[in-house]
Image (cartoon, rainbow, N blue to C red; front, side, top):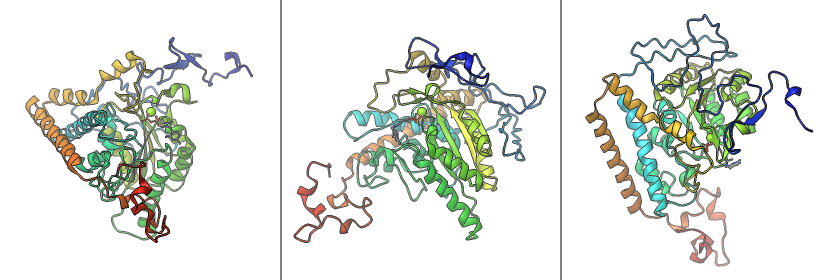
Length: 444
Ligand SMILES: Cc1ncc(C[n+]2csc(CCOP(=O)(O)OP(=O)(O)O)c2C)c(N)n1
Ligand SMILES: [Mg+2]
């Protein structure tokens, strides 16, 4: 059936191309105000429940890091679950040590990923490799607030989250090289970074499937605390996923359960505006993902994901809510990836103007600028960190390169519950031990 603009109510959106390139930006034909028009023009912290005269006015977050020195970030913890939380993010303070920690973590993420690109093109890695360049403020802003006991669940763009959570660069690089010293003994690869020790539960290739795992982990925390009466069990779970993934059904089911049971979980949507080559604005009926929080009875927050300080302030309150038993929070971080979807993607679909816009808002340069302007660090101090990280990443590559491949008999471990019960040949030996069994299927 044909649709026309006149048949839509004033609250209805109609998607129309904003430019001649049908692959890129779509906007609202009815001219309704939206904070998501083409991503490059308007990035607002929405405050729909506040009156225009309210002291805590909506804050335009287009400009990176207009942070000031006076700490008065008094988030209102008594906010109703049904309203959208706002924080007065123009008042943020970091100490020198905190600033240096954030800087180092973001530089580690960037340097590690740049090295991955090199190693991938040299044939050292197998399968798809999805890099995180540009999105570091989200990982760092959230994960550096976590304790070791807290759970982290990511998707396939997962190396940097694991690094932020403390998984050693050596183990992550080795995993990418498919080596036995990797954090999954070389059996996971780029999309399945996992660490029991650091409570990193993955690394999931199928989008959406990580969200129920994260929700289950949050449930387990609540169960341990309330049923098993474990002392000091105030752990939280963070689930990271993309804008494209937020259109999957699991997301909505888990928002419902998390709100219903007041689970200690933070749903972090990394809205980088694209799902492979599909624009978020073209694929999503209401592109403001944060609004889905209040719809399910939890706060929803929209924050500038290119500004680590703002991300961190939002993350602090969301983590505090979860720890004190006030339940889940949905945070939408508007961010951008600086490279193609994966290293196999020539990245020809996105508008160069859009890419340039975000390149100019590089979260690492922004933090650097902020630290200089506020006398939190000088050039030499940050250079020393850059050098330390370069050496660490070099060391990770050498370690991975020199590490052995997994032995052949490991091939079926962690694949079947009882690998030894699988594939017994007529001679009574495990077929996986027969070199011919795996010939040509894997480089082990
Ligand atoms: C269930 C499922 N359907 C489709 C795919 C193919 N796929 C891989 S990545 C991707 C896009 C995801 O985009 P987004 O969630 O925005 O994450 P981003 O890559 O932008 O970080 C899709 C559809 C998949 N991996 N799993
Ligand atoms: Mg995306």
